[in-house]
Amino acid sequence: MTFQKPKGTEDFLPKEMAEREAVFAVLRNASRRFGFNEVDVPVVETQKLLTAKSGQEILQQLFTVEKKGEGEELALRFDLTVPMTRLFIEQQRVVAKPVKWFALQKNWRYEAPQKGRLREFFQWSVELFGSSNPEADAEIINLALQGLYALGLKKEDYIVRLNNRKLLEGLLANITGTVSLEEVTRVIDKSPKITLQEFQKELAQLGLDKDCVEKIVKISQIKAPPAQAFEQVEQFYMTDQAKQGLQELKNICILLPTTNVVIDLSIARGLAYYTGMVFEIFDAKGKFRAIAGGGRYDLLVQIFEGEKTPAVGFGMGYATLRLLLEDRGLVPKTDTGPDFFVVPVTENELPKAIEVSNQLRAKYKVGVDLLRRKISKQFDYANSIGAKKVIVIGENEVKKGSLKVKDMKTGQESETSVEQLLH
Image (tube, rainbow, N blue to C red; front, side, top):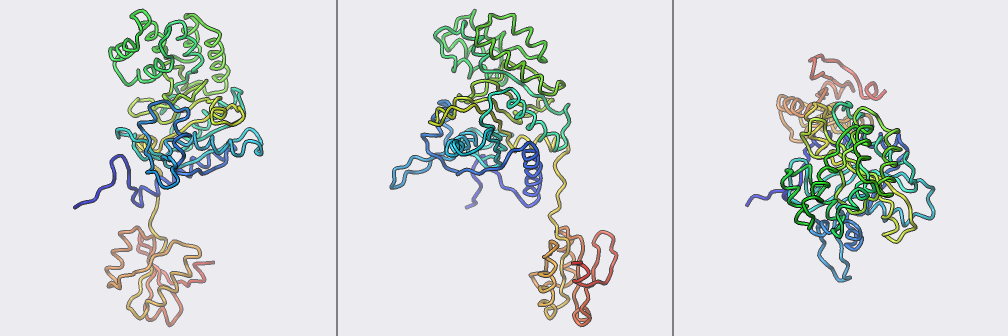
């Protein structure tokens, strides 16, 4: 019998692990430069919390935990926004506002695995609680872009697709009649991934007539730079809600880069807790799924029984980000090899080799032979793990208290001591 990892999960070998941690270090640094502090939350939360305001789709995507004696109904978290909001509510009355938190952790969703979409996945989640101003929305988007820039991506490598749920729902209000706006919005959010015919069919299946379907298609097809898109939007009947959403978008856009931002009314975000601005970031060539997505969720704190607080945030998945970095040749260069590999000539020098290794580990990454191999085999192993230098300890070195060092790249040999290496 051969055991395999569960479908939709990943293993990380040392090289892949080092690359992942290098990316995470860049994202952590970008977060802290924007004044965000890192938090951590439990892997499991109550099902009641996870299903409170995340749409019916989430029910089918939860990894539930078997009930134990206490009768608790728990599930693995599917994102970090919900548990971080729960954490904020617990601290709401004692922390200074705005609260700026981020996390880099695993999440779980039971859905069909695809390229860039896994059942177990890492996510960079950034949340800002306490400001309803457009500069808070812009701060979130600008941080996401700064993270990409810090990883070596250029503006021409990605595009920000921006929308507002108030604008979209306001435009739809006089079209959908008694049909659920949430259902229509969910279909619109799917529209970039399906054909026009499939889009029209799904709208019709909700009970919308041909004329309504045509109007919704026209609205969802607005995709243009801000100034041009705003002109197109204003050709439709504007409810007060739509006008408010449009003004919010205009206020945000003046605080964002002008070169790679597009207003896209098909961006609705599937999760039901979004209330205002929503956005997604894609690679400019359209080869991959969304790199990041987020928006404003001003009612979530209140829904979770906290004091009403405006909030905005985003999540960036590592799986798709890594695909983009690989495509652009920007995966961080990492080095998992030791600085030194200590080679005892015989078993008699093994105690000294262990002693030297432990001394040098105060400053360096150091390996030592653990299989009592011949010198040639030890050198082969040192070369295979990428050791930069090899320290040979024989009878003469023990007597003299010296070390023979060979540079594995140049072949140059020298004599030194532990004290000189640690100086």
